Length: 197
Image (cartoon, rainbow, N blue to C red):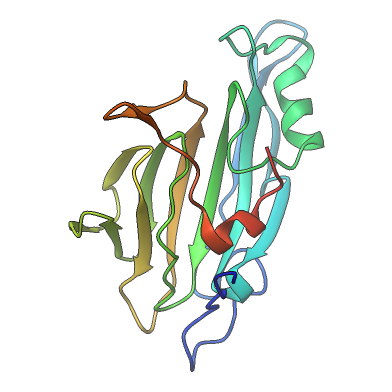
């Protein structure tokens, strides 16, 4: 039996676009180099890929992604920008990174899930609770950062009246071993929210 997607709590409309109502539309400014070799703003926009999540409980905006099999990002001929534009990424990019901004509806809460990845999450707007499968919790406010090293966790917007926003950087990692056992993805219904790796 599959886990049911909860959507936004009763009484709170779904988020149907990015940004969520009450939050600003964030700009993405990509810097490149002109013919004289000087830095310039190559493009300013609102990201390439947007989609709703968990029945309108959240909405994501993909800011940037890249794949780098050799460990270094190739900026030549705008290869990285082309990759980000042309590829709607999965949760993380194998041998790469995804930068995604997620707006959460008031009171929205994810299921407990594990991505076998290195995830940096920072609160941009609102107050968000991070809970771990050990039962430990932390309340995060704007500017606070979590560094999740493949831990089983869930997110909750603590406000019942205001949306919240987080910015995530997700990096691929080597297989993670804990007590001699390899950790596996445990995404629950969130697995349906991302293209498959």
